[in-house]
Image (cartoon, rainbow, N blue to C red; front, side):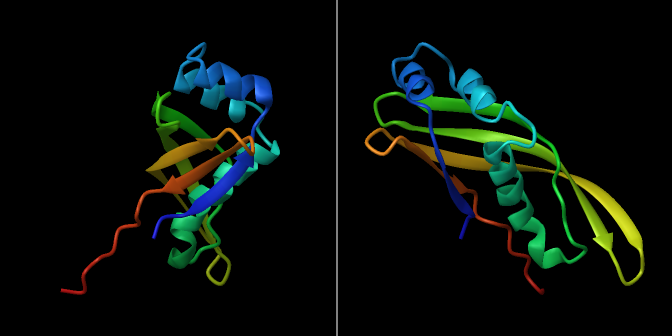
Length: 128
């Protein structure tokens, strides 16, 4: 199952997205604009969650939205996040860096002023 998280939205930003005044890319840029903000941190934590089972204390400090879209009628959209991930294996003091891209689908709940993100299904590798 994909990772999930929700964020509260500012009324003005939500209205501008739903009315079509701004594109999804501009909306997401405004939502995650401040590095270190709660929204930015929540996305970083969602991205890390895809690598928690790999060991190495994964850490994401930065990401960028590489693609996005929004359907005003269904109030749903998507975004693809490209990010670097850092692993630190403490027992061996080995550091490793990698890049990844995760797609998130989202739905806007106007009533509660919330946006709900659901990440893509993680890959499962066969033992064969």
